[in-house]
Length: 58
Image (cartoon, rainbow, N blue to C red; front, side, top):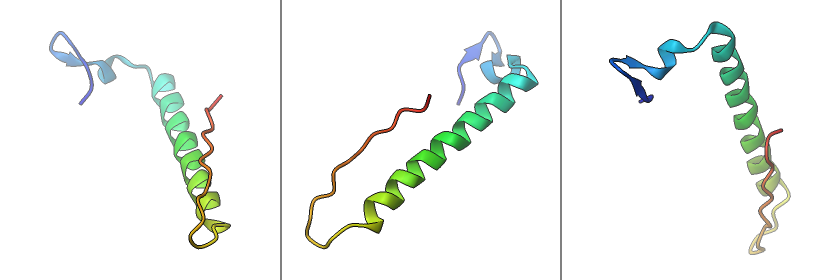
């Protein structure tokens, strides 16, 4: 759920451009998460610890 402003949701007050920007940001964030997960397991050697790298979106 989104936060409430009076009796309306905060999301209702966003412009179309804001919604597009949020959607693009979410898609990019998810792509980064997937890339990290793939790289973590692609080169993994059995019974070896894989270092975790955290990438912050710009």
